[in-house]
Length: 63
Image (tube, rainbow, N blue to C red; front, top):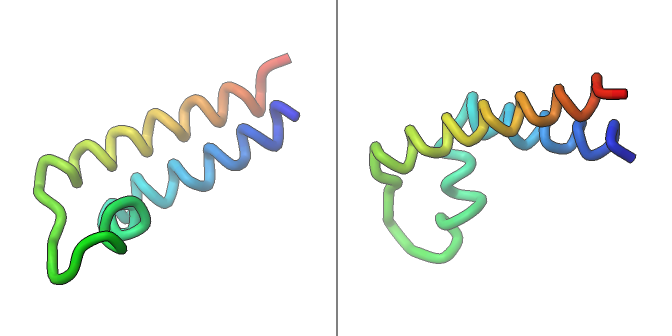
């Protein structure tokens, strides 16, 4: 179960870290028309994606 949760966090975190615009569209973009994410949100999405990847790796490789 921890491995599956780790894989899910790793995939979502990787998508968010690589493409924070996708994370914004997935979370907020569908709610508003003709809006763009702020630079602060893009940094936040990238950092939180990296943290999710680290947590996912810890879950995968933990005993």
